[in-house]
Image (cartoon, rainbow over the protein chains, first blue to last red):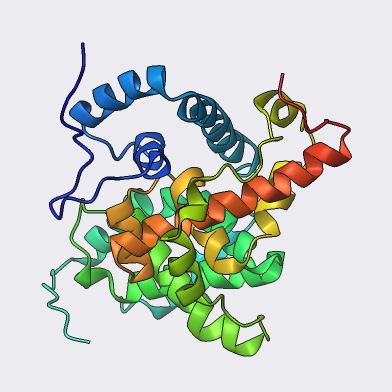
Length: 89
Length: 197
């Protein structure tokens, strides 16, 4: 059950750090192969296991706590009025 | 700038349809972005309004069904830099040379805030997360907004910000470390001890 080749290794051969791998996973930028590799990597790397949870929580909290502002009343109408004034009929 | 633009030809009705169906649905995200860049409701409104007016003016450079959200974010970001930042005296930009060399150093693999834990984060029910985000320098704040709040991919972020993907990644990494430092301070002030369980 070991993946001998690290699929995160880039064309220039540089071995990625744990943090670089984790970031790709968290941001949904990893391929299926990289995801599988990282899953088994976490079994052997406690800091990655811990950071994964923490970073994921922060990402979720950012999304739920920082996107709530509603658009001021009338803004859409204001924009539409401006556009219709500038639009040749 | 040499940019090949394939101009479309839309009727007024088509323009209005694109505007209503592809541009306007993003207005909440746009306003949130504008507000988190300026921290001022009126400035955010102005930025959003300018963005939509510009988008409409150049609508024929937009191909129906493509990535309207990324385009709108790019316009807003540029309006912010070119119009707003010039007017207001924003503090000087971060020294990215320093950032990049930091990223390439050994230091980054060290856990910066070992005391920050999931439980303490989940207890932050007030504005701590939002305040921590707002406390970041605008360029760091921006990458977090684009990636974590809005879910843009690295490639889209690179296009919105006019920077290489490698820079997107390193800036994001640094931004997250700074955010964690901030959250660690909040956790500490909430009485969480720096001990591992």
